[in-house]
Image (cartoon, rainbow, N blue to C red; front, top):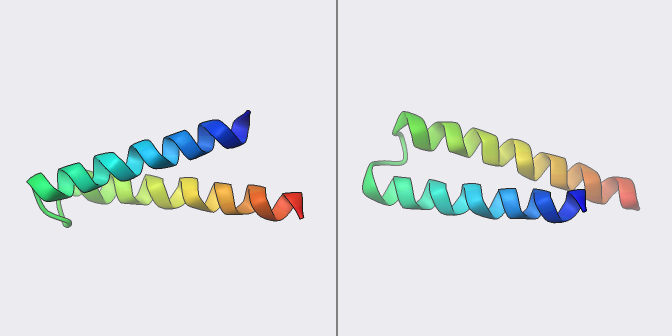
Length: 53
């Protein structure tokens, strides 16, 4: 359950970041904030996968 929600959140943040970057810039503060959050989510997912091994 947690894994599915995490993957959904990752995909939503990725899409939002790409959309905003296309319409503003990659250095726009909102894009940077989303990128940081996306990194955090990806790290959580990686840790989850490693815990399964």
